[in-house]
Image (cartoon, rainbow, N blue to C red; front, side, top):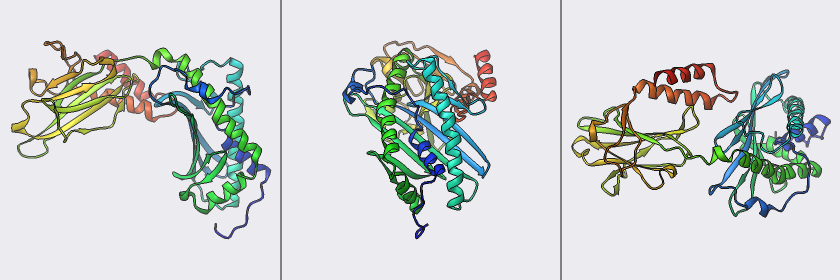
Length: 379
């Protein structure tokens, strides 16, 4: 691309800019409150983010497919139904505090945005001689941080690599985007009016939307669900060694602390896996420890979570001969933990349902629905 002249801004390329700059919800214009007002108590001590993600796949010059969804932190709240050009509200409170008219206006806006964006992208693809198929990714939103200024973001990616972002009322090319990104940003930065629109959407409209969402969903978002925990042994790491596995499941919210302990000392060899979603919106985590079989006695798994209110769960290796599939859900203040046997297959199925539900952006897959029904009747 080096050496090519600056492209003139055609009507189609102007639409491309509009597509990027207006990719957040188009909310009614109103006087914007000072940013300090967004720092008032929302009931959350941690930062909370609302974002819209979009993936558009261009198979050829006349066929494309778009997947789009809205997320409050890691909870999906909206999805875009492309067949009917409608926003699907996945939670009872996903409408926030907006009227039906405002929401219908958003639907119409997003439909027009996608149509025009795809037209403009196809025009640019022809001019820049882009090879099909290719993928365009857009993420936009804002983060509320108690007592701190708002952080907003708008980023675009091309073929899975950062391409450009919107920062301080200006389009900035990403190093990975090369000369193409530089060229596109040069064109877009010539149009001050559209940059102002993008800045207004990010700085004013997005915080107003997320505050309404938080207020409407406060009961759900502030719920505390206690974790269940159980121990098992994993595949042997080698002769004379054990892999101790501590499973923690069913907790909400997501932050959790899990550690293998010997007395009051943390075991530095503890390996934590990723925190994974369950089908019901709660979370699952496992922590493992590779030890000499002769040193396993006296080890314990300790679980800290906000729902436990300081009454940590402590499970001792070998206590009551807990093995694969046993789960305990009481605090250590009770000498008689309540333990029940759950078939390992059901545990694995439960996590499969959660993964299917999370990975598919257009709602729960029929396979996940069947698995969920089976779990409910089998437990």
